[in-house]
Length: 150
Image 1 (spheres, rainbow, N blue to C red):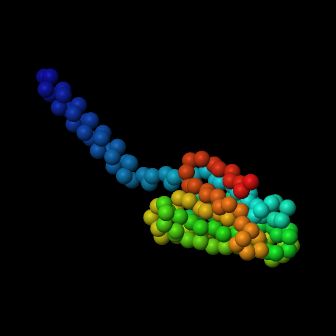
Image 2: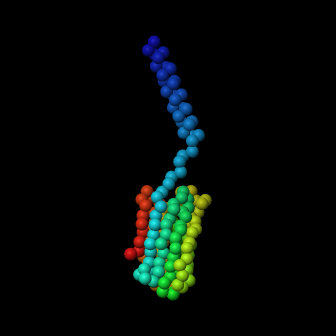
Image 3: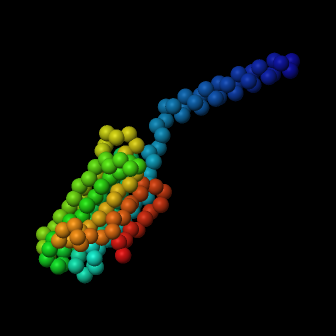
């Protein structure tokens, strides 16, 4: 009798495992989410202009939104470079003419790249490459970062 009782239990356990495995396979995994990062960068001093904004991380791309300001009259350019490890995936710039404040809102990354990218390098320059902030890196990780060039 002992072996008779164990056989049904083992069969029920195996059936339970099979049902659980089937249910897990049928249920899509929840998409990973990462906290947003923010940035506030100035080329040499904030008295001449700069940029501030945020990065909303997605699975393969990120949405970047913010504003840039030029106060000194030489124009401001913000550089954005997306990296997967050390490999550059995508890049773009946003510029504003002299004595203006301009908004920006765009998506960066490669939606077809499995795994997307994990680092966004941001740098702001005014009047050419000789007047730039130090570059900062927003990382797709579990930490919300407030990045600053100061």
